[in-house]
Length: 287
Image 1 (tube, rainbow, N blue to C red):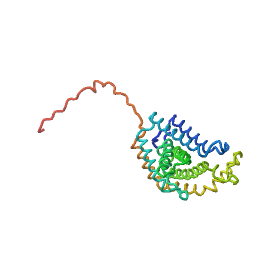
Image 2 (cartoon, one colour; image 1 turned 120 degrees about the vertical axis):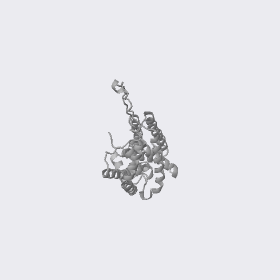
Image 3 (tube, rainbow, N blue to C red; image 1 turned 30 degrees about the vertical axis):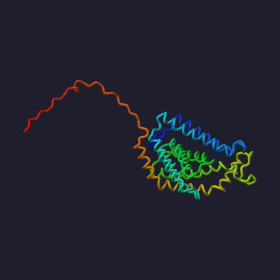
Image 4 (cartoon, one colour; image 1 turned 135 degrees about the horizontal axis):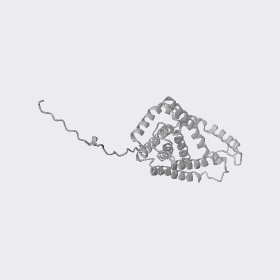
């Protein structure tokens, strides 16, 4: 379906399978407190393992598209440039009062360049910023998953344009800010609260009771920060979104990431009338 933008990374069958595998692993990594008891997954062993698997799957997405012709050197260069920009923007917020400067670019780039590009950009930009700021730790794999999903979902939004598109992207950016905080809290909730607390993780509880405890924990510890992230992202999309979308779309058109192949039939034999050579008109000088 034509959504009015050029996808820098075309999500083809192999890429869909690879992204689905990565998302499935991410859901298991985030949601295990609701399914298993502590001790099955270790807070120190699981994140590095998940991080390694995620890197392999992200590389698999890129290599699969290179093999299928869905991504070329121009798309990889665009991915590198936007990852560097996002890595440089992230320290400007620093998470102070929930202010984050990384999500609006994920939303806009995923919207223009497609869900595959958004997924890859979410992973690479967070990884690059972690290297720049020394933010490498057990939380990095969870952050990469969260940002990858936001960038991917932005590329799957309905094909609106104009003010309706900006309003939709702003609402999605705000929802993405809350979603990111909701997911990231799952990475440390089972290990960070006194077990005697009413909002602590308790193994063996039914799913509804466990979810109720987590919702209370999220509201008590993270809702304010998530609100700052949501407001920052929505305002950045509203203010910067129109010129950024125009610039991204213009870059996509000029880069021509996926040119449409057109084949023209070879010229047939010329008719005798067409093969006749017209005599040149002779003009006499001076007349």
